[in-house]
Image (cartoon, rainbow, N blue to C red; front, side):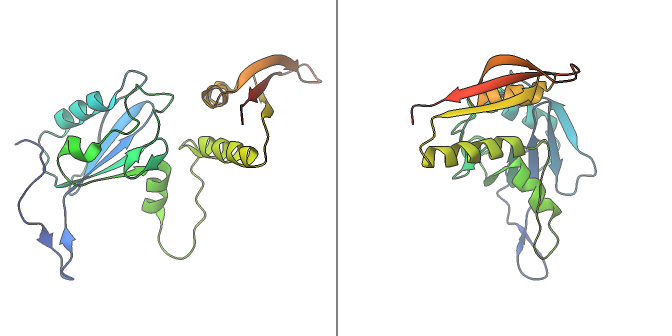
Length: 201
């Protein structure tokens, strides 16, 4: 059996709504995890800087070759607009920006930011404040910070970060910050980097 988009009529629940077999793909910086309607286990494979969307598509198809699905839901580690990624993640390969997942899978596809997908899956009722650590929250905050700065006419930005905080340093560099100088804490226990960003606007 091969995993494919089925053209058979969808099953119907008691309320008359369609019930579909959905393939869920969670794209991460170290692993890509897949889940399926009615499947009792998740499957995964390693991702990383060499993972392009085409390679991801090939690996997913091999991994779920014995599953049937008629729709796909993709959790993407970055900004999404009009059902497509806006930019390439810093920790994956190239080619993600603008990639058409629906054309690639040849079935209905919904692409969401992975943090938004996690929040949606956690929601029960009422109002919920969701903070997903390690799921793009830092990138979102920096983007908002720089956007407000541009609106106010700021051109120079500065920050300090502990030299051992490599994920944060990579994040700031991906936003355009550069290391300007090294600093030492007063007690001599820690080193910090002073980072700066200058923009044209």
